[in-house]
Image (cartoon, helix red, strand yellow):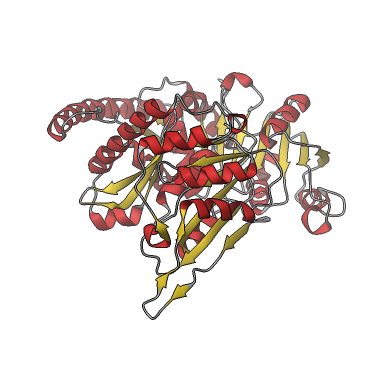
Length: 514
């Protein structure tokens, strides 16, 4: 079975290169070409009133819609002269909703193709990848070259790690692998046990591919402490691979997805291999929990304080490698301080904010994490139940981004310059209620190429701990309970912290560990 339906996504302002290349690719395999032309409005300006935002955004929306209609018409005219079977959809959506909207339109395709122009648009590409990779069934092919994607490449490198994601990627890539002149199977530090890789590493998948008419050469590569993505890119250069086929390498989400990335060996694309190296979440994962003791008929909880929580948590860790402790301000910083002291590790913080429902701010409808492109996590159930519109969500998110900017300007002078890529990161908070903020922080940190993520908290609901187990390798939680109540109920001393308290935490840390 080949690729009978190919989807490509175009930005409303993109030149025609991506569309031209998609047409050539679809013509080569006689596929139906489905095109989404997307426009994402700019967020409202900081500090503007709701009335001003409504007027400005209405004017912008009218301009964006006119441009989208015109661009869609141009795409339809170009496809009509291509001789292809095709369909074109236009999509005008807020950035926070784009991934879901794109995924809905990608449910019935065999392959999603992203070209160079869209790949260079960081925010749009991130939304497309998030939607296709995690919410749609078909594989994703990223082509960073200015040439049309060749679905009959000469040399293919398969990154293999004996996981279900890699197996699915190989199965979906069979139409390509069968036609390739050379297929190299690369295993980075394969486990030495028959159940995972065969007595001869790679022998199991090589035998499967041989039965599919694919001739494979398998080789193992010693990784050492280098990130898997860097190793794969280097080996792809060395063998002159035209295409890398790989799974999501055990990405945190339970629904194992995969993607293909064409020509990641060209450093000019400027993109880190973060998508190519999510770590395995199910292998060797540990959850530490100590059930809360109860006293008396009323079931009151025995209390802990921040210092005790910090003293106890390091006892749960069995980590001897390079560690960075990252606290969630403000409440997580005193706990992070004690863990950093115990592990003699550097400490930093994650600029993350809960996005509360306007009428009930303590109820999280999402969370946002600072970055070049802020990472946004939405709680779809809360948003639907509360009847939150896209504009209201965006307005609330912008308010939290302003608070993040305020904190960054205040704390940046005391924050150490720490590169977390390739290191173990321990995410710490004083407790978890819904898990939205911690999950957003974990997902954002994961994209920075870390080796492993550990979540460490003194208290959390049992069901939230179970959910977080699907996101990271280890969850360390001393007190779990269901029903949970409030985090403060687990503490004897639970004061509200100020910015000065956060700054003091860094001053208390030994200079060598900052």
